[in-house]
Length: 99
View 1 (cartoon, one colour):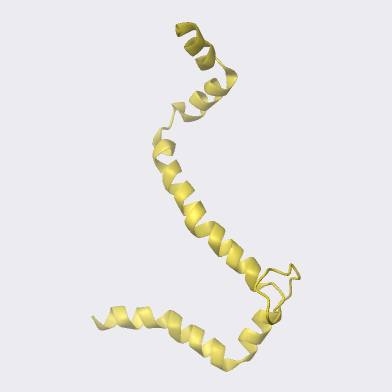
View 2 (cartoon, rainbow, N blue to C red; view 1 turned 90 degrees about the vertical axis):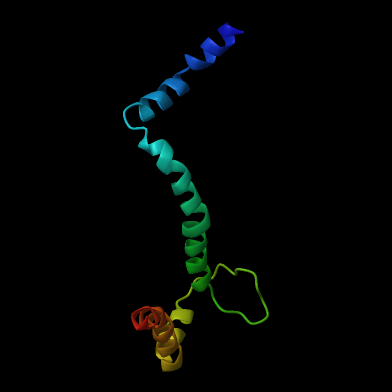
């Protein structure tokens, strides 16, 4: 039994992992938070950005993979959309200042 454990521990992979985390064990505390942040924030935001670049097609929900800036041009060319975005972004600032 101890022979199997020694052979696994003496492998090059485990030596590399031990060498990586040997001097600074703070990474072991940061790694779970980083993975959580990556899965639940970074990946959805990046995917939303790529979906926003997709060509708008009526009646379809599927990604067409025809990237165009038409959505952004329409957003910034109409003042109603632009003003609504600014009002929505500045609303938390005004609510926090009023208290």
